[in-house]
Amino acid sequence: MRSSNPVFTRRGFSRDGGYAGFNAGPQPQTGTPYAGSPNNPYAQPGNPYAQPQVGPDGSMMPPGAPAGAGVMTIDSVVQRTAITLGTVVATAAVAWIMDLPLGIGILCALVGMGLALWQSFKREPSPALILSYAAVEGVFLGVISNYINQFAPGAAMQAVLGTMAVFAGVLFMYKQRIIRVNARFTKFVMAAAIGFVLLMAVNMIVALIGGGDGLGLRSGGLGILFGVIGIILGACFLALDFKMVEDGVAYGAPEKEAWLAAFGLTLTLVWIYLEFLRLIAILQGD
Image (cartoon, rainbow, N blue to C red; front, side):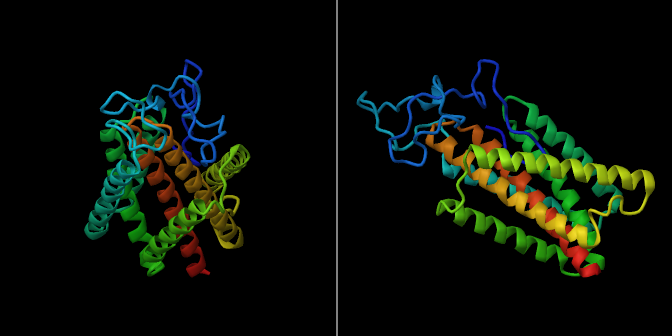
């Protein structure tokens, strides 16, 4: 299970033909939100983690029974996400308090991108790698937040509150099935995100070559528009991450996948926070 993140691709099909390295077995009971999901990464034939649980008396446990040891649970995802996000917040606070220069923040951003790509292409989650990414990404966020906060006072706190609001709103709509994540939704979001990232890359290249604001996609009216689009895309990827967590728990993904769930959620929340920070800076600068 890789993160459904707009910057880093999700796990593709494994060499044995299964999605995300898990080929599933029994389907959940009819009537559950997981039933009839042939595209589910944990719902293909052969998943060793999705076999029926065996009780102490040797009998087969029904679907929905408490997960056994070594299986991903909501609690394990919450715990690992708290550790990962806690690392981001702690290092961001240190960078802010120490008033580190912008150059160090940019260096940490590049290192964080490299670590994130490394983990994204690994077949197995590495807690050390994920926490290292969280640490250096936190330094970058602390530096850039402090820098922007100097000419846009309160921008960092507003971005934090905005990110929390988006997370809570998407979680509520997902749990109420107002947002329904299916194959069409996933394809649309992935296509939109690829287009968005490519546009931002072209804008940055033009800015580096010609100077100024490039194509003007990150300033003025267009900057506001693309900032809102970026936040909406982040919200959509939160829904995809929630779906991957829900499916992983329902189909018995191994416990180590909780680290990848935490990694994916952290990537998406960082994306949303940075889009809010940029948007607020533009609005206060006008």
